[in-house]
Length: 377
Image 1 (cartoon, rainbow, N blue to C red):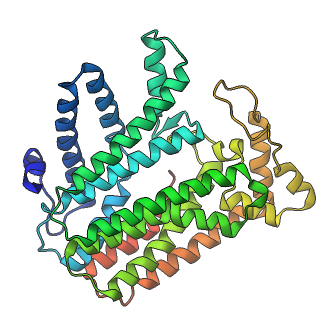
Image 2 (image 1 turned 180 degrees about the vertical axis):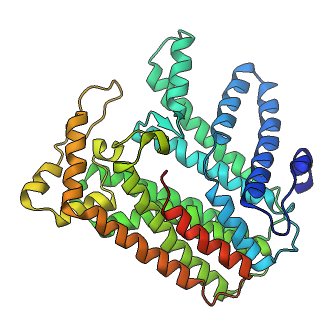
Image 3 (image 1 turned 135 degrees about the horizontal axis):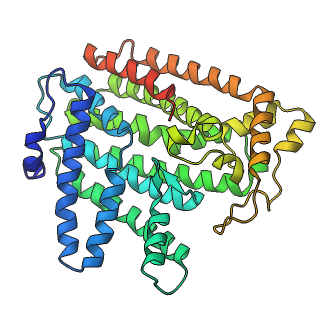
C-alpha cells in the first residue's frame, strides 16, 4: 500500500543519497497532500459539509511548520539504514507524524484559547468564524471548540491510517503508541499545572517538558526511525533516547522563552500567552525560585487574573504583561534557562559520539540539535 500512497508524489522527487532538507520536506509535504486529497474526496462524497470540514483539516496540516518530527525520524532511520536504503516504503510513517502533530496543536490551542498558530487563525477560531459568517444558531465559540476537537481527532485517525501504509516492522507501532500516550500524559500535566501553579516546581515543569514535548518531538521519532530500519540495537536506541530527551527538553525551554519574549510576527503566535494564563513553565517556576519576595509578589496571579475569557474581558493588561516579563528578566531566570539549554544540547551531542550510526546522520543530528534550540520561532 505504500506505493499507492506515493503514486501522486513521484513527480515531486523522492530524496535519496545526499538529499537536502528541502527535498525531504518537499517529499513529506507531497505525501501528506496526496493522502489528504483522497480523504477529502471520500468525505465530500458523503456530504459537502464534511468536505469543507476535511479541507479545513488539510489546510491546517499543510499550513507550514518546521516538520521537525518527520525530519528527526528520517535521520533516526537513515543513521542505521544508510544512504542507499529506499525511502519510499517508509515515507508514509514520517508523514504520519505531522498528522499526529496537528492533532496535538489543534487540541492544545483549544485548551489555551489561542487565537493564532503559524500566523493564521487557530482551528476553533476558524470554525467560530464560519458559524458567524453563515449566521447559524447557537454560540459560535462553543461550535468552534467542538469542531476543532473533532478536527484533532480526525487527524489522529488519519495518522494511524497513513502509518499503516508504511513498510514497517511491528515494533514501530509500539514506539508510536508510547509516543502518543506520553504526549497526552504531558498535556494533562500541563493543564493540571495551570490549575494549581502554587504546587508546581522547576522539576515538575521539566517533567511536563519531557512528556509533552521531548518525547514526541525528538526522542520517540528518532527511535521510531530506528525501528523502521529493521536493524534495532540497544546502543543506538540508548544514544537516540539520551539525545532525544536532552535536545527535546532544550527545545521546550526555548519555547518557554519565546512564549514570553518572542516576536509574534516571527513566531506566528500571540505574545505573552503563558504569562496571561499563568502557565507554570520552567521559566516562570525558575523566576519564582530566584525572585525576591517583592518580585515573587508581582509574579503571583490571583485566580481571576489567570483567566483569559473567550469574550476577551478580564485578565492582565498589556502594560501588566510587559511588567511581568520585565520582572522575570530581573530575576535572572532567562539567563539561567539559556544555560540549561546549552547544557542539554551539549549532553545530546555527547550521546551521539560513540553511537554506531552513519557519519552523515551524526552530523545532521548535531546540526539539528543546535538549530532547533536556537530558533526565533
